[in-house]
Length: 190
Length: 361
Image (cartoon, rainbow over all chains, first blue to last red; front, side):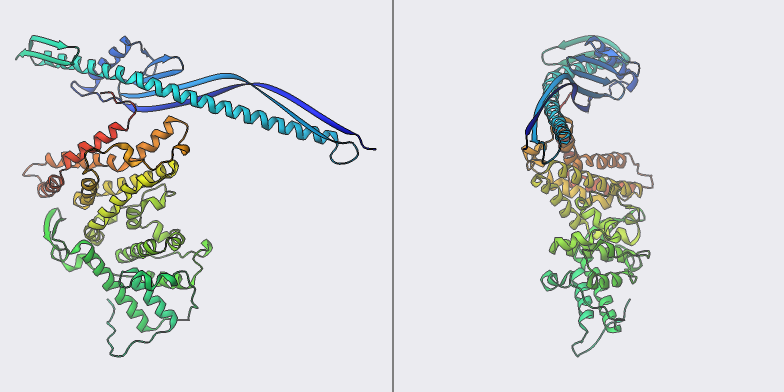
């Protein structure tokens, strides 16, 4: 007489999952002064905005999961979002058979374990996709915030460069700036 | 050049030779596709040899057809192109001595025609390989052969695309870059900006302009993100290599079709970068912004190449009256101004800028 049996396995695993996304682009800085002086002005302005200088000469600022890196020499901007999360994934599987026919309990157990592992990997994959989506969303949101700020930085650098250029050309007699329109009028005596 | 076959009687040829003559004429545009397309891929029994009559007929067809093709495509137009650094105006046969535009064929086209009529085209193991150095006329013949097949029988075109003389043919690659996405290296265009090959490029300007306009407008119909990226990258790679060769040889006039393409492409002022990618399916979009941006950037590859022309223009404007390159630079400036190059470059730059997610500056 055959006896039926059932094997139930439940497993959970804690995994550190990551999602990341990044874009690289270029700041359009006018070459009012020689490149070294322009990069120095940009460096100074970025530091005022909370960017920290790194050993390789780049300036970075980390806000939440997003890191903004600017190379003041090449004007290359990299915005990277890294989302990391410790996720617990759980799965449960059952297998069964008869003790006198079909695969033996050890084989059934192995099969269930294999299926369980696949389930865990699948769930982890879905969680990974979720984190990837979160990273992309965060990056997109950050780009919207960053655009006016970077435009402001570039404008300030350009204005400062124009002022220095004016000083090189002669004596500044009158200087008026309109913060709202961004206009800058300099009268110099050569 | 072959001797002309002169006879009052209709020439009788064996079936195999008749097929060779038909194919040759179809490839060089002397016979419409409908007359031959059904026989493409058919296998004929190969005889021990080919009669002199058939050989002469084929040679005549290649010679006359190729010349006619070049003349009709653009050679008939009164245009100015450089000869030894000086602009020469006129139709192609008025711009220089006959010696500089002689077409000399080797036996390779004949071998290819024989292979096309006898081989199993879909068997990659039996793909035809040329072991000889091809002449300019041969290369032009292989371009014409591929073009004729590509426009009438895409299946056969795909089968012969693996042949080295097609795959590595700079003219084929310049006109059909998107079909060669797996080729990571651009073809060598250096021989095509000098000698008889450069004369061919001169004649082909209208055809190249139409091809590139088609390539650019077709991007909007592509639905798969990765495919668009791979095709666009292949196109930019090819055009970039061609412009580099033109620049190095100081033959900016050979890139006139790029200006013509840009003029037609950018004539509408309200263009947006998304106009190049409107066909892409939303559900197939890559999850990462970096990948989506890479596709968008690659789709605008043609516009990026406008920067090369802009640099040429800057260089031309710096050439002085007493410089050796003065006449050549004047010709370029004339082309540039007649196409409104400065405005085209501004529009291209604006579109490229709009495609960037961070537009600071």
